[in-house]
Image (cartoon, rainbow, N blue to C red; front, side, top):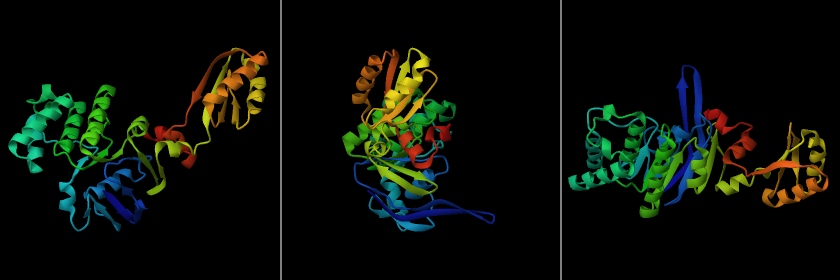
Length: 318
C-alpha cells in the first residue's frame, strides 16, 4: 500500500538548510496498522505530508495506494483519507452539510453521502450538532468532524496525524473504536502518529520510530519492547532501614541488574518480572525484611525510545 525509497525533504531558511526527513524507506502492507513515533520535529508530520501529496519531496520516491506521489498525486488523493493536525472544516456550512459536501467531492451520490454522514455523526457523537453551524462547534466537536470528513468515503488507506489531540478520554475511545472497526470491516490500511503511546501500543501492528529525520527502529510493539533490558520490579519496604540489605538480596538474583535502592524501596530490572517477584519476596521474608507491596512494570514504547535516544517521548510532548 505504501513503498518509499530514500524519501527526503529539506527546507531553506535564509542561509540555513533544515533536513526534516533524511532518506526514509517505508513499506506498509494492505490492511496493516502502522504507528509513527518520534519527538516533536523528528519528521513524522513532514513524512505524512509527502505521502499525502501535500508536500513535494526533495529526494527519493514513493508510491501510495499504487500511484506515484510525484507523477499522479490526484490518483493518490482519490484513494486516501487524511486527518491532519489542523481543522479542515469550513465555517460557512452546517455540520451535516459539511460532511455531505465532503462525500460529494469524493464522488458519492447524494443519497449515499447523506446516509454515511448521518452514520458518522451518530458514531462520533455529533448527531446533536448536525444542524449547527460548524463555526459554533467546540474544539473537540470540530476535531471529531475532521475525523468524520476523513472517513466518509471509506478510503482503503487512512492517514491519521494526531487524530485524538484535544479529545476527552471518552471521545478518544469512541474514535479508536470506530477506526479499528473500519479496519475490521473494510480492511482499511492505517498509518498514524500520536503522542498517546497507549494508543499505538493497543492499535498498531507495527511501530516505526523516527528521530532527526531518520528511522532508528521498527517492529511490532512487543519486538521493540523486548530490546529494553527487562521488566522493572519494585519492592516497597515497611522499614526504610532495610533498603541496603534488600538491595544486596536483589543483586543476588540471577539476571537481575540495574539494582537501585530508593528511600523506602528497591528496584531492579529482570527478564521475567512476574516469575522473579515471588522469588525475591520469599528471600526477603526469610531475611526478616517486611514489605508494603511489590510492583512489576513491563517496558513501554517510551522506555524503548529512552533506551535508543536517551530522551523520553512523554517529556518531549509535554
